[in-house]
Image (cartoon, rainbow, N blue to C red; front, side, top):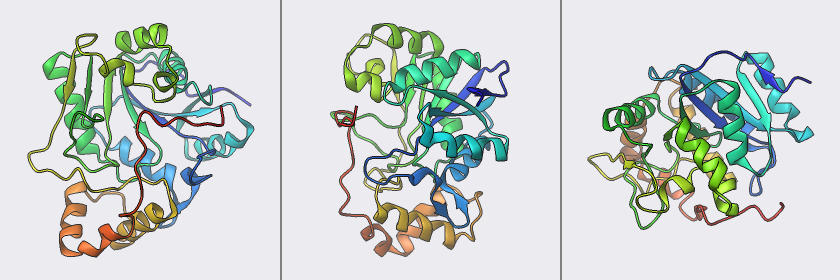
Length: 260
């Protein structure tokens, strides 16, 4: 089986990390969300971003992820296969193959990822001339965008330096912490929204999360073109939606997969 699909010159490349071996909800990236695999929702919503030159699925060499490659082949998505647990290496190698100058990190458990939020974060990255920009950072920072719209942007030079220098397990598994953990190591920008929606949880780690995003997509008729602000309005009209996954504990960059 080929390691790479559709190699070509990149530019600003979104890399979506995806694997079947989730610790809390195995196989979640291919679970059905209103008639489509969740990964397809993420890829196709990401592809709507105008700031991107390429969207790539970065999966692993584990045989269980052949299912992801099959989906990519079927849908014509660009993909790369690499390390299962050294996700920083997987990103770096994928970025090299697709000749990325700027990397946008997206995760496959965020089916509500919003192209306008991606474009805003990428735009702020370029406008401010930083090494790394994100619309979420862990404590002691705060977040104003819902969990599930997470977008991280860095230069290839910054990613390569992290790949060479980072040696802590959390740096390798969570890809970007080396870029923002130490003040002054890189130029870092956090992109905020004027209103605070940081307590909303729209990512998928559990069955409760999955039930919520299914309800959201069903409300919008199974289409991909609704915006995150339309979902905010839906939550304002139906506050009980937030109760569906209110008890789920969000994982942090300090949580590591103990199966390594």
